Image: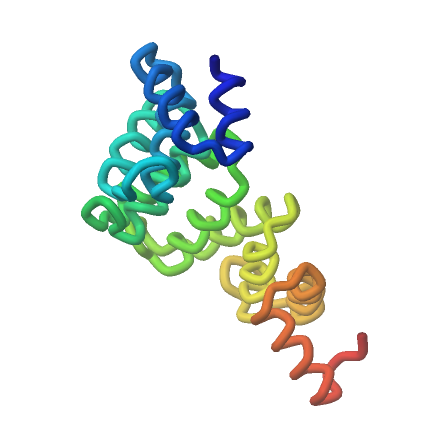
Length: 191
């Protein structure tokens, strides 16, 4: 039934997906809580309800579903469907990162860089951004370049800053593209 529910979701048969995922949550199938939360979050096949989405994501997160852990963290960070809580957001980003969610590495790094919900720690931010950047996260590539540029959590290195910014720009990161264009126009770099 899990595959049938997922197939209904992919086919954009949201009413059928909602019905099947609701049945699966009664059987306590972990990912079904996430997908049902997704339907509530987007208002697909059901009236949009971010509070209900948060509750379902949280249920999936406590059942070790990494994407749900990431979504819970994001909602806590933004105060969407729940009360904003940076330290709880950091906790859930860390849980998702432990399970390999690359976006969670980037977002947790940003929290360490800014000292939101955690004690500010540029070295930890650098380590987390680097892991996500190497894995291909575009935002992390840009953020890592910024750390190299300012020497935060690492030794200042303009060449590495440009290298990472260039990687992000090539993947469509708008700020990185703007910076690279400005640097090229100023004659600081040649593509």
